[in-house]
Length: 140
Length: 140
DNA sequence: TACTTATTGCTAGTAAGTCTCAATAATGTC
DNA sequence: GACATTATTGAGACTTACTAGCAATAAGTA
Image (cartoon, rainbow over all chains, first blue to last red; front, side, top):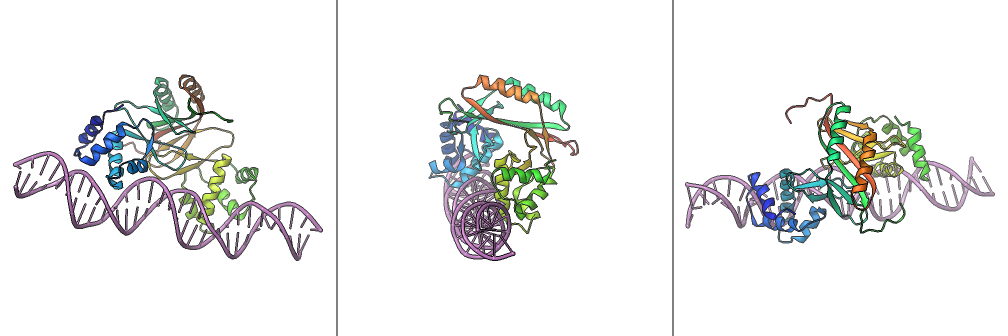
């Protein structure tokens, strides 16, 4: 996973200062393997103001160190991104666990589609909703 | 596009009654080629209560007649779905226009990926963020 | 150490969406 | 058609996720 130093470095690249609250957020984030909500993060860091947590995640989002998941329900989920990779996510619809996956085929697919549709493709988002290996797949 | 009759029929399949507010929503929806927010829909239907609009869209969502788009910003966008098709969407990041596209390659890709990752793939979501043919693609 | 400026943490505000509940409208039965 | 039953509605209060404003504070710098 990303060492918190990298998270902080990502912020510094944006011209941000490395403050105690940001260090605390980076440290906690470093341990997050799954997806998370900002609200939950904030609850785990009672010493840091909610607004600061939101602000920091927003910065990390800009820096590309975390990314927003397009979950089905309302809650905004985020997940760490390995810097420099453009990964896609699979979300377990039962336990919520998020896995990143890479597939060169995806990139090929996107460029193939780009050629077929009008306009210019700027970005894409691919998410798989799965029942992960640890969850029982009842019915469906 | 979907005749509003079909939208109502979709609701009736769920065991819902065809009421005047639902008819009004279906009629308006029938004309929506683009994506829309429930809030905007509600503003166009001052005679129908906000809660009712939200409730009806939720029902149509369950019925599979509309689907939720995973837009980058916070606002929840919806779009009509042709019943029986599982289309994907491209969203113009400048004007917000939504196009549906179908690509058999997508389905093939998904099954290829399914084989590679642990767990069972239930559903997928693919969205392209584009600058559509009608918008100037400045910079980026 | 003092200065400048970014950052923080309150708190209040906003936006999207849900809940409650009494009033009302749809359907089925006679 | 009248009546009973049950789904639906609308108004507004409420919740949740998030942002804005602003005085207090902490970082980097001279």
